[in-house]
Structure formats: C-alpha cells, structure tokens
Length: 96
Image (cartoon, rainbow, N blue to C red; front, side):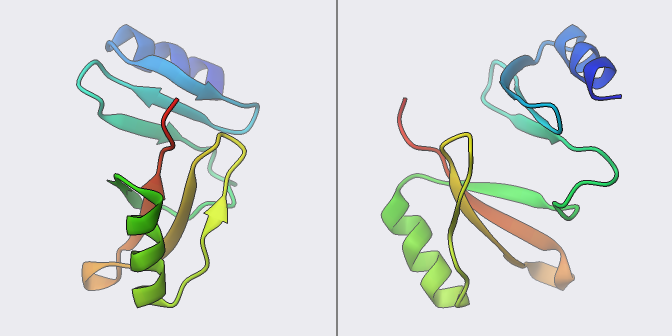
C-alpha cells in the first residue's frame, strides 16, 4: 500500500519529493532518499548512487556501455551490475 508507506516514512521524518500512482521518492532532512516501489514494479531491486553532473553520468554510461534514460521526474539514469552482481543505478538530479 503505497499511501500507507508514504505516511509511515513521513512519521519517520521523511518528506515527499515525488509522488506518482505507482511510486514515490521520499527524502530526509540530510538528503538521504528512498524510492518506494510496489512489488510488481518494472524497476529491479537496487541501490542508487547520485552523480553531480550530467557529464559525469554520460562518462559513466559510456564506460559501462549503457544507455541513459530520462525519467518523468526530470532525473536521468542508467542501471548496471555493481560489486557482487548487485544492481546499481547511477542517477543525475538536475538543479531545480
């Protein structure tokens, strides 16, 4: 239940950064974010690492030979295999 999860994280001090009917991005006062995704999500279980510039994202994607995907919330990212086969998303958040 996405709505209940959002309310639960709000009680823990998180605020809603992005909210759609199929996912939410919550962020705490220190900038730590957590994406809330339903079990049937098209996104794989993963961790995300934020890069500071689009150029940094492009350079990393080129090294990994991966396409960059723009998202409806304005971010851009790509997924790759990380250490021990864990999936890692590198993501760029444009300035507001």
